Length: 199
Image 1 (cartoon, rainbow, N blue to C red):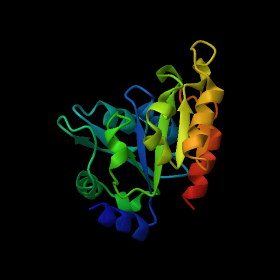
Image 2 (cartoon, rainbow, N blue to C red):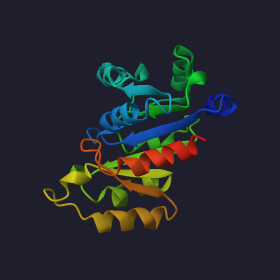
Image 3 (cartoon, helix red, strand yellow):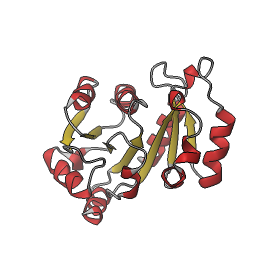
């Protein structure tokens, strides 16, 4: 099914991103802000993966994006088949970008190919700077790492240099953006990457 998804996105010229992070790292806030700021330039659709509820999908719709909710009913990751079914639930072929917001978890989701073109890992400052060391496989598979809530570094014991160095050890070529989805700090660099990859 991952191959089918990949072929679908390629045939329709849609950039598909698989966004993975721990719960509470700011995935939905980051995606919502991206939709609000780029909505008139890039058409973005979101596939929301949650164990229960459609709260995040509703936030995406409130931001002006189209969203399809997948409830995993206890499963810790999305499957390629679920994504394939979700693609058919909205006009994915008319989108410029489809973002898969995976279930909040840094372990399980990274082991499953959903047919995405790029994998985005979100690491938030309150989680601590040790995540790249604890989950090296997850960071090694990333095309982009967003270090979110960067506005909190003055208030939280987070060694940014250590985190950056540890990411580079497992993934020397990864793109890293330091952002705050709340204040907007650093988001322009992320938007530029997104616009360039969407061409």
